[in-house]
Image (cartoon, rainbow, N blue to C red; front, side):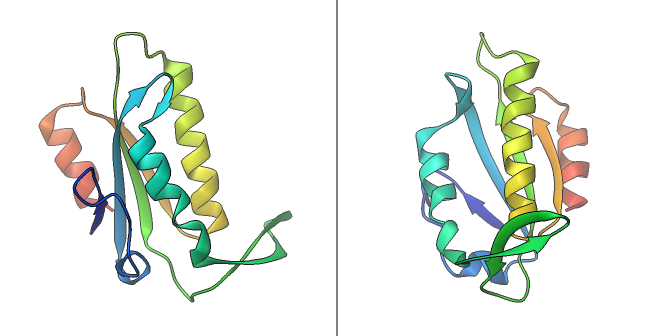
Length: 123
């Protein structure tokens, strides 16, 4: 599994060789951290600049044959509401669609350890 963290903020080519990929971040001012946003933006070159119709929408043409399944793990702040989580989750779900990859889940760190472990195992 590829994990983007503060210790490895830049995903490498190993990203698209992975079977699964998890993104984890605290929610800061209603969105993921700047570190995860920067790492996520660095995935854009893994697509070609050309567009094609995919599922009745315009999406980038894939540069590679296959991309890993994606999952998102978020940690709430005191002022985080459900709408923040829904918006972030929808953005990552749409990005997975652009990569033609499977978006498995969005989980919160306040879920039980067993639930989180089961969700990660299911990727």
